[in-house]
Amino acid sequence: MPERKLIDECVHCGFCLPACPTYQSWGQEMDSPRGRIYLMKAHDDGRMPLSEVARHFDRCLGCLACVTACPSGVKYDELIEQTRIELEQSHRRAWTDRLLRGFIFAVFPYPARLRALALVQWLYEKSGLRFLLRKLGLMRLLPDRLANLDALAPSPRWGALWDRLPAFRAAAGARRRRVALLPGCVQAVYFPEVNQASVRVLAAEGCDVVVPAGLGCCGALSFHSGRQAEAEALARRAIEQLERLEVDTIVVNAAGCGSTMKHYARMFHADPAWQARAAAIASKVKDVSELCAELEPRAPRHPLSLRVAYHDACHLSHGQGIRKQPRAVLAAIPGIQLVDVPEPEQCCGSAGVYNLLEPASARAIGRRKADNIQSLNADVLVSANPGCTLQIVSQFVASGATIRTAHPIEVVDASIRGVDL
Image (tube, rainbow, N blue to C red; front, side, top):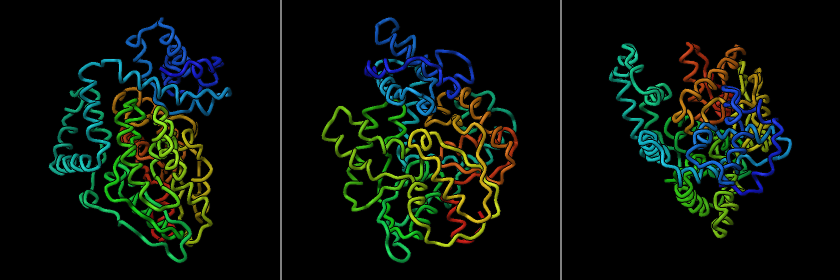
């Protein structure tokens, strides 16, 4: 369980309640941050066995909105991380839950396996089977989690399945930085255009860009879910590869990955040798919008006549404290009308693999987010995290809305190249 001093920092003031998506959904104290901290304390005192409180910890998104809202500086992020580690080590789940979690973590952190799954999805869709099953309403007969997997699954493009990034791209003009780009897992397979746009923009802004061959998962999904040993193994491999690169900055374009990597040292709190190595890597990590905001724009921006709704990904805004930089980068594009989504501090319901494991809760939270976005009459929704994009698009599809989506760096790339988004 978490350190007792972290638990005792909570004074139960209630400022976290309006920020918590699950408390907003159900109004239940035990499904609020302070309620979950009370359960942590009760378990630590021996008054409640883990089996009685596990469900409330599972239903937490780990969105970190409560960390931003807390006036006392309670480290709920560390509390829920440590609690989930014990939960994974000590609590035996139902076999169906173990099976789904086993599938997710055997596939999603491994780009090659994820690419094979995307190929199966492509065949499933192109054969007409997906359309037929939906048309006949057979998806409604499946367990909610399986039906939700289909609803969330994007439509892979054949060409994108074989896309590969260049190992190196030289800076345009005088070099200002030498950077490494983390291709990611879901990003690399389902959103390769985001990585391609990232390489083009960084090079146009004077960065030599290195894409490490074979760089796998950073460990974010596993760490977020309390799978400590698995997360450490993935992070060690990533750290070893990144250490060999002579770069000034490690650029990440997926908010969840960036948040985890910036807190790598916390992952290795019990291993001083690896903690030092992790901290050295973490000190170089920047979100792509964060780096672009630091660099004085070099490449000319062409006008884009677009009304853009900007969605704050939780692990960018709450996890990394990055809110102004993406807005500044987008606002610098001529013709852009940038609008904020109402209730920006609220999660969309993606939260790592939360929407795969808790589909009913994720849908309710996602519906609120989608309704807020649709109220803006925007041309495009911009999000800095692939999970957020998939989650929000699934809600658009369910309601019949047709709003384009893009990563902030794709908008910048379109402006620099002078093409339509």
